[in-house]
Image (cartoon, rainbow, N blue to C red; front, top):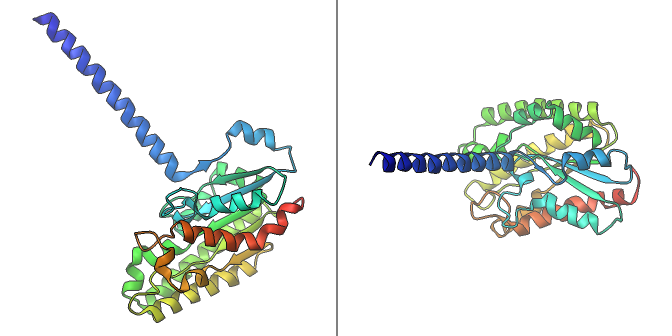
Length: 264
């Protein structure tokens, strides 16, 4: 009897241990899938450091960079890489460090990390989607629009964006930076005229800040979603769907296609 009890305890301990290891592995996989996607390994990056003919795409930002809402998981940056690969014989490598829910405050902290700064210094082209979580706040800020609160959000965002762009330029003076503008996912709802005006003003301020930094280009997306917005949105009525992301990729690609034919 005692022997059987001992065996049962050992078997139970083994099962519990296995489940704990599995659970830990799942948590780690989920964590890293949310924080960064490195298409190449660290050793691959080291090997490429001396290959000046390669094109390195660095994507920073929020859930739009992660591709949330696209059932393929590619998002605009994945489709963009595919389009650029068709226009050059050079090797194009994508490093995606987008994080769901990222705000401009989070971005300023992220680019202080040593690994991010290393990626920035090696990047050929940098893409950023940021500001949606600052402004929309899950839709709360546009459901009950208050001019003072919007101005406060905008002031904080502008300060963070300027800090982020200055830091990026400190570590890489040559890479072109493409800053993707906001669209209005609520343009077909009540008070759409007012919410659209808020988003347009936000984009105008972002474009003005971008213009103050060399080789930093603002990419408008507002008009892509302006008509029939629900056609291009995911079922959450906030993030783009596959078609929406493809249209975003088309817009960005139209501005950078010439770069892949030249050495940076």
